[in-house]
Image 1 (cartoon, each protein chain N blue to C red):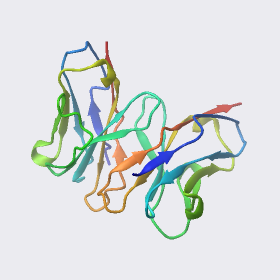
Image 2: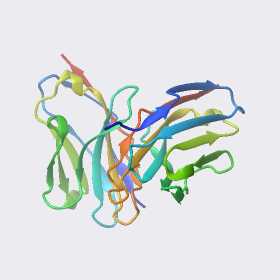
Image 3: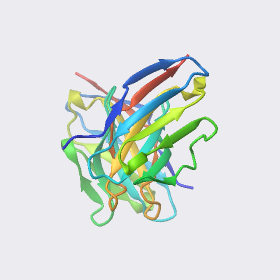
Length: 114
Length: 114
């Protein structure tokens, strides 16, 4: 069965510091992979996605993620965090033959200190 | 382009009462999804529609939850009767028919059952 694990429930980083949020997935083949961000009281906004090709994908707001098949990981990175990046981040996996169903991780809450 | 609209944004009811949520997807999006997001967890798919037909409702508690998408546009999700464990945010998402994994989310309806 497909599953997504985000090992870190809560991370705090200083403004201007680099960020890496971890995501590991379990799936029998190469899935579609996504990172979403959710600000308080808001819906989910797609940051970036990986379908195929280059394993380093660029997203919005300066985020990037790298697909590592050997580690079943899709970690999210940002070189310099801004206070406005404080939010909940969700990693999700979609199967290539299941018409859109997404399995989400439990989320990582990011706090940014000045 | 207008996003996914949902109403109401907040709802408080007592257990055993009924409640309904409404969703209007992005214009032209054939696929519509309802997710349940319990506090501290990632969203979980409840039901997926393609136009007005159900594609996947395997995780919908059918004894109390129902959903419809008449005319293949707007959708309503109903809970009757509500239980305390139904307290959650209910998210609606939509996608184009041939891009099912690129889902756009609405702001959600926060339901509190007392």
